[in-house]
Length: 150
Image 1 (cartoon, rainbow, N blue to C red):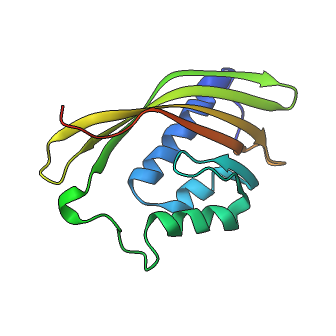
Image 2 (tube, rainbow, N blue to C red):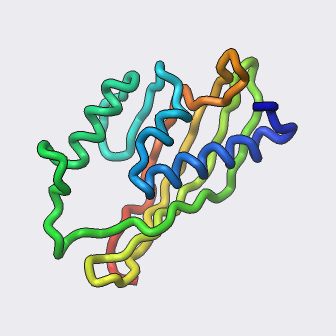
């Protein structure tokens, strides 16, 4: 893939593809955008995630021990959109450092919108030998939690 002249546009395209994979529950689409040596501060846990095996374990914990959703149906909130806002990206040596705000829109079990989650995110991206951009590190910091009636 030929790099775009604007790193923010290239990172935005990658991040929007990653979030589309998340909403579609397509972990393989997400994993294709991540470095195998990924590190991650996920918003749901304190520990730093190291590599794809630990990411898979995090995903398993989120889905419950048996893969079922651990939240009762009546309390379930469904994410409906992930919107990237205020994307900035700049080259630093051989990497790209990107920051953005993420708005997570959602609805409760009755289909009513709830107040969105807002998080600030930072990512460090590198290029593979073939020129593909990959996320090497990501840090998610929730500033406004999801939930509550709108």
